[in-house]
Image: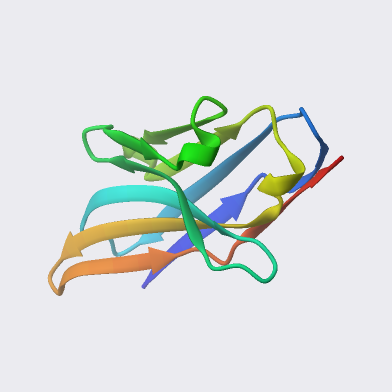
Length: 119
């Protein structure tokens, strides 16, 4: 069983910063991609940022230049450093891990952490 434990969400004023962390534990195969998605009230879940095993990154246009994704392969942990936060960044942020194991490709999701940006 694989568990993703997220931390770092909270309430921050516009222009502030937060750092999210997500640690993957359990019977993992080869972790290929790690990333963050978010879902605001009444909206569909959207990709925020991803990072591959060789640290190739991809960002949503709305967060480019403000958010930075990184990973520690030794700790199976992915981070999201968020700066210059805006009220429209308010959402539940979900960690995602894509791994290849005995069953082929498997997606894992965290429970979500709330990020609220006040104006």
